[in-house]
Every structure is written in C-alpha cells, then in structure tokens.
Image (cartoon, rainbow, N blue to C red):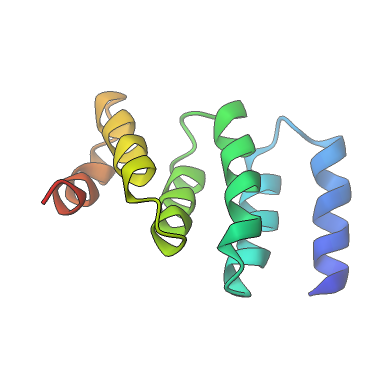
Length: 96
C-alpha cells in the first residue's frame, strides 16, 4: 500500500486533470479506514471534476464515515440538481 500511495501521490501532482488519480489515491486511504485522509483528496478531485460520479460517491461515503452528514447531504443534493439521478436514493436517505 505504501508504494501505491507514493505512486498516486506523484501522479496527483502530474495528472491533475485525470479524476482517476484522485479516485485511486483517496480509495487507498478509504480502504485503510482513513477517511480523514481520503476526504481532502476526494474533495480536491471533485473540485476539479464536479461531474465525476465515483469521486462524489466516495466523498459522500467518507463524509458519512467521519460524521459529516450535513456536507454529505449537500453533495448528494448538488448531484441531483446536476442531473445525476444515481444520487437520488442517497439524498432521500440523508434527508430523513
């Protein structure tokens, strides 16, 4: 995992226009149950790639894991407003 983390950290500096770099680096931390470290990575990636469904989904999952339900709900609502209907069920669940 350390080698993968190092490789994707380097890739992040080189390939900022590739959402997969943020997805994979954040996923390394998420798999280690380190959403505290994954959230900033996913957040940066989503800021650069606002239509990236996988990035948004993983960011929402990590926000819920760290207890930030308000921000997770906001991101789900933004997605639905952008026409990303795959987030409608998540939004309904978070609005209960």
